[in-house]
Length: 319
Image (cartoon, rainbow, N blue to C red; front, top):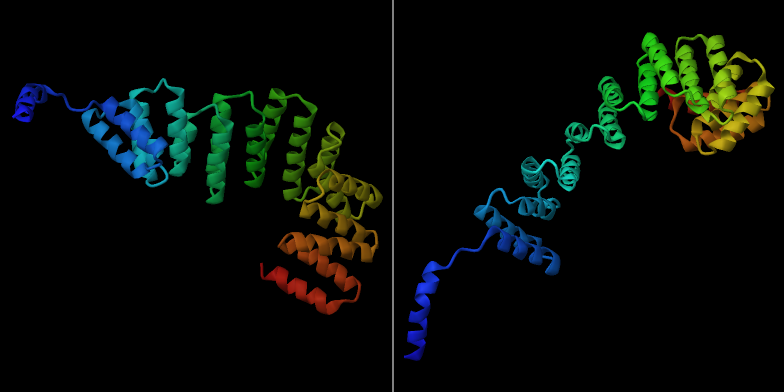
């Protein structure tokens, strides 16, 4: 009887009881996620919280973090909604950026962070991986338009324009880069790119002069040292100087296969066939590069090892 009276006394209170708030449900979700390490149950709590209040920013963010390993797209939807509700919150912006990257939305991530060079570079590299050099270069140009104090995108634009063999554009960007960054190391990089462009145009003497200038500005520019050494070896000029240049390049960057290749090629031009063979064998073992294989084949042929020379020529032709 007493129990029945007690229940009857509670009925008015139960009738007026409020459903759980979004905040209470959110906290329960956090407990499940952090204390019990149960993301499935946590997500159920978060979804109940969002049913109670679809615009509960803390729950949207927590749900995004919780479900990201299981469902990247749903996590992105949560994160995007949270950021739309409070776009002034830097943590939410960073969360949305990470979720965009998780979903391979590189362009959106870079657009969301216009001054972040790492993100711009990440996006540009993703375009390069798809063979879209043109758009990759444009990403760096857009970054420069918004932020002029970072040198790397200027260098990447130069590299891209040189790859696309747009000589006039390389000259324009070389001038812009030197004007913006008069530092000798940067200028050395610019002259190296100019040398590369001229080399692509078979203007070997002019390219050599650009590499010489680059080395004068920065004696530790390994790429300029390598390229000048190869340029001289190809022309059979100043071979002892070429040897000094490439030895210095390898000392600076010892694990670059193309530098080892140049070293072997210079030795070959000097008539040091056994040394050339040793160097080029190392280069071949480091990189599956047809040009290196052809150099190695030529050295083997000069040593009378015709069978192995033919083997490497065939391998190079199959690349």
